Image (cartoon, rainbow, N blue to C red; front, side, top):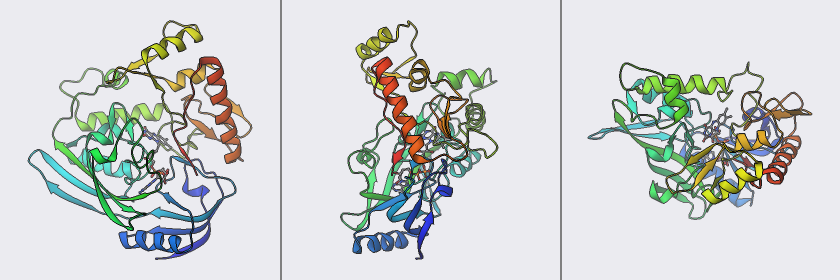
Amino acid sequence: MLIETEVPLAPRTTLQLGGLARYFVGAKSEQDIADALEFARERALPVWVLGGGSNIVVPDAGLDGLVLALGTQGQRREDTPDGVRLAVDAGEKWDDFVRQTVELGLAGLECLSGIPGSVGATPIQNVGAYGQEVSDTLVAVRAFDREQRRFVEFTRDECEFGYRESRFKLREPGRYVVSRVSFELTRGVPAAPRYPELQRALGELPGPATARDLRHTVLQLRSRKSMLLDANDPNTRSCGSFFLNPVVTSQAADAVESRVGVNAMPRFPQRDGRVKLSAAWLIERSGFEKGFREGSVGISSRHALALVCHEGATSGELIALARRIQSEVLARTGVALTPEPLFW
Ligand SMILES: Cc1cc2nc3c(=O)[nH]c(=O)nc-3n(C[C@H](O)[C@H](O)[C@H](O)COP(=O)(O)OP(=O)(O)OC[C@H]3O[C@@H](n4cnc5c(N)ncnc54)[C@H](O)[C@@H]3O)c2cc1C
C-alpha cells in the first residue's frame, strides 16, 4: 500500500474543485482498504472515501486527514434460475459495468446508463434515474465496518434504501467502506419503462424496448441535458443534480402551488401517497434561469438543477451560490431544498 501526501483532489472530482489531501491511498484490494483505515485509526485521522468524485464538494482548504480512493477491480458471475448474479468490486466504473450488462442482454440497470462514478458509491445514495434505482436489483453489499474493524455483508433490506438515501448516507455516515456490490439481473427484455419522458423519447418501436434501446435513448436524453460527462461541454463541471427533488404531502404541494400562484406546478405522485416536486422548476420560478452566472459559478444552460463551475471557480463560491438559491426558493415557494452532493 502506497501512502502519498499532499495530493491534489480537484482533478479527482467532476466539479474540479478543492485543495489537497494530507494523506492519500489508492486502494487496489480489500487488504489495502483495511490497512489504510488502520493507518488512519492509529493516528486518529479523519477519513474520506473517494470513488469517481462525481457527488462531492471538496473544500478549498483541502482535507487534513486521509482520502481513501477505491480502485479495486473485479467481478464474480453466478448463473441463477432467472438470470445472473454479478458481484462487482467497488472501484469499477459504474457506466462501464452498465454497458457490459446491456451487451450481455441482461435487464435491470439500463435506465441507469450514463451516470458517472464508481460501483461502490451507488448504494450510498441509492443511485437512480429514469424510473430505476440500484435498490431495484441490488441484492447485497460487502463493506468494511470501521467500528468492528472487519468486513460485513448487508442484504438489500438492511441497506435501508429510500429516495437518494440509505443507511450508509443517513443513519451511519462514514462507518462503512463499501468494497463490493452484488446485483441480480434478468435475461431478456426489461420491464416497460415507467418514466413518461423516456416513454415519449422511445417513440413507436415495433416491439417492447430492449435494454439496448433503453440505454441508447437514456444516453441521448442525458446528453441533451448535459447530464453526461463530456470534456467539450461547457456545462460539464458539475456534480449532476445539486438538489434533491422535495417529496411532500399533497396538502403541502397545494400550499406551494397557491403560494407560487400557478395552476400547473409539476407534481409526481409517489407510491406512499406523497408527491415529488421538481426542484428544477422551483429554482426557475425563484428567478434562477438556466445559464445564470455569478462570478465563476452558475447554473447549467441545459438543466436548472445542475450548478456548474467555470474557469477560476472555488468551492466557497459554489457553496455561496447554493445557499443563495436555497434561501430564495424558501422565500418564494416555502420549500427548503436539500443538497444532493456530500460537502466534505
Ligand atoms: C453529470 C452527472 C450526472 C449525474 N446523474 C446522476 C443520476 O442520474 N442519478 C444519481 O443518483 N446520481 C447522479 N449523479 C451523481 C453521482 O454520479 C452519483 O451519486 C455516483 O454514484 C457517485 O459516485 P462516485 O463514485 O463519483 O462517488 P463520490 O463522488 O466519489 O462519492 C460520493 C459519496 O459516496 C461516498 N463513497 C463513494 N464510494 C464509496 C465506497 N466505496 N464506500 C463508502 N462510501 C463511498 C463518498 O465518501 C461520498 O460521500 C450525477 C453526477 C454527474 C456529475
